[in-house]
Image 1 (tube, helix red, strand yellow):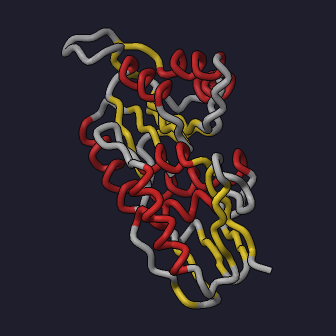
Image 2 (tube, helix red, strand yellow):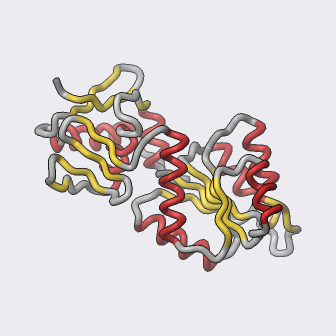
Length: 229
């Protein structure tokens, strides 16, 4: 998944970034509301992790603002990206305010990093209409384990090839544009070009040759993963 983490605590940032990256996610980190708003507007995300009490900008003595305002603005422009609020404000009335502002889930600090991962998977299941296990032909994606199998054999893939195949299986049969795949695999400091993406697709096609699933190119549109008949 491509995740936006909006959190100003440097220690928590580092811990969560390491945990989510180790789980195979691509994570962009914003430390204040201005930066978070910019990232959220220019990049599509699978999920947003949002702290509530945040500085307005990157100045050392910046005034504090509420992440709920950022959330309200995103919802007002029609952005339906699932949002998991992470905050020390854990009273019932504050949770209700967050949910009313458009949050999809709420987790009070301190929290377990494994629970964050589990809640992210649950949000994706609900919003994208997918389950933890998806099968195409003899190819099976297990999101919880972050592994792909052909029958019972583990199809070991490099991280970016896994991300491409995971996107094509969310859900399978859906046309995915080159731009969407490139955005999911690129960072703000790097851009994945068409040639690199086509190389990932080419390698995946070879690895899927005996899986009962294949990647078809839709000219001028992108790619689709289909069951071989």
